[in-house]
Every structure is written in C-alpha cells, then in structure tokens.
Image 1 (tube, one colour):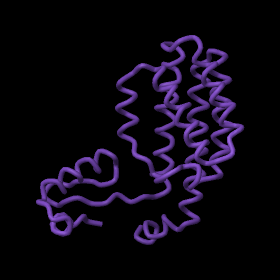
Image 2 (cartoon, rainbow, N blue to C red):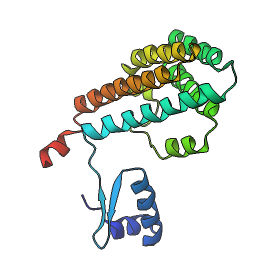
Image 3 (tube, rainbow, N blue to C red):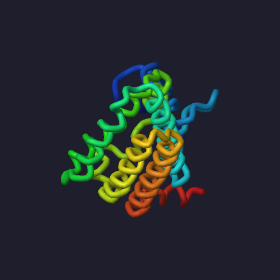
Length: 193
C-alpha cells in the first residue's frame, strides 16, 4: 500500500518534510520501502518477516553473548544466573518483562560493543507494550532459553550460548507468529498474495 504523504502532512498540519523524514526512519526499521519517483510503500507483515525478525535478534544477542564472555568481568555468568532464577520465579508479566530486559541488557553491556548497540536499536519491536502480557506463552520459552544461555555462559562456552540464544529467539518468534495468526494479522497479506 502506498503511503499518502500529502494527506498525512495535511492531517498533521505539517509540511511534507517531517513526513518524509519519518518515512526514512521507518524504512531503516523495515516498515516501509521508499522507491525513487514512486513514493513510500508499507511493507507487508507476514510470517517470514516475523521469523526473520526474531532470528536476527537471536543472532545479534548470540554474538553479544560470545563477546560478553570474552570481555566482561568474570562474575557476569553469576549475575546472569541470579536474573535467570528471578525470571523463573516471577509471577507477573511486568516482572518477566523487566527481568528479561535486565538479562539481555547485561549481555549487551558485557559485550562492550557500540556496534551491537546500533544493530539492536535498529530493530524495532513487533509486539507493542509488555511483551509477556501480549504473548504469555513466550514466558516458558524464555525461561528455558535463559536457563540454557546461563548454563553455557557458566561453562565458558560462547558458541553454545550463541546457539541457545538463536534457538530461544526462534521459538519466541514461533509464539509471536502463532499469536498474529490467531488474531488474523496475516490474513490481509495472504489475500493480496
């Protein structure tokens, strides 16, 4: 679907310039494609896109885990273990969300790589709000995944930690795909294909 830039600018009471700038940001995040002399077009949200999104998260966080193991303080695996245990014991979506963010942030901080931060900032969320409130089935997937990543980190096995990150994020992506399918969010895309 083509983005009606003039109509959006008029509705917002702004010139086309801020609308174009917003579309450039949305293109960087993968939501639209800007075509020279044709305009901007909304990218379809389909199952392969969701799977690719979470696979990329797994690869980036897995890479960060390998780097963190090599660069962070020796107590990183212990710190991750403490968060992982808290996650497993948590009973609310808000706690799961906060602890998940704390775990992944600790990995990224330990990696000490501005490039990893840039790559992660470029990835926008597909599920707005509290992820575990919207996708409650992902709690069990993440709980198992964090435990496996923590074990690998405690063993000093960066390759295994990276593989476990990819596996966990792939399984989370499967839960998101299932949710989107149940909510018929892919139907319009499939109908136009």
